[in-house]
Amino acid sequence: MAYAKIKIKTEVKANENKLKSKNVVRISLAEQPAAGIEQTSAASEQTNSSMEDISVNSMKLANLSEELNGFVQQFKLSN
Image 1 (cartoon, rainbow, N blue to C red):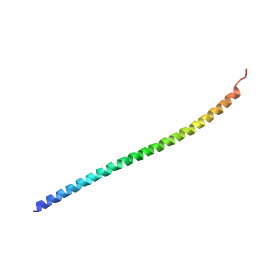
Image 2: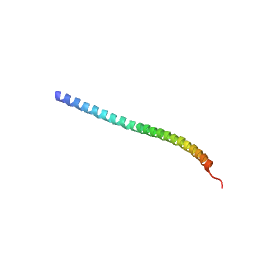
Image 3: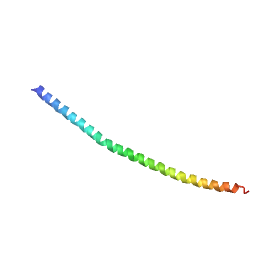
Image 4: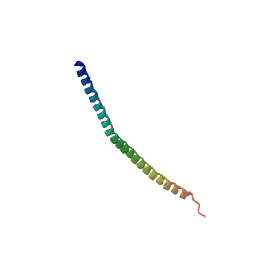
């Protein structure tokens, strides 16, 4: 009789552990898309920031080019 109770309790615990494991897997699987979305968002923000830096630096380079052309015009010799 005591053996039967122990066996039943053991089976109940085993089933509880299986359910807990399944729940952990479900939670883990549910979190994966959210993590992917967060990573994509972070990558997009970084790309946006990089594009802004490129734009600013391109404008600075264009201004320097115009300034340099102005200096070169001062030294051109007329024929």
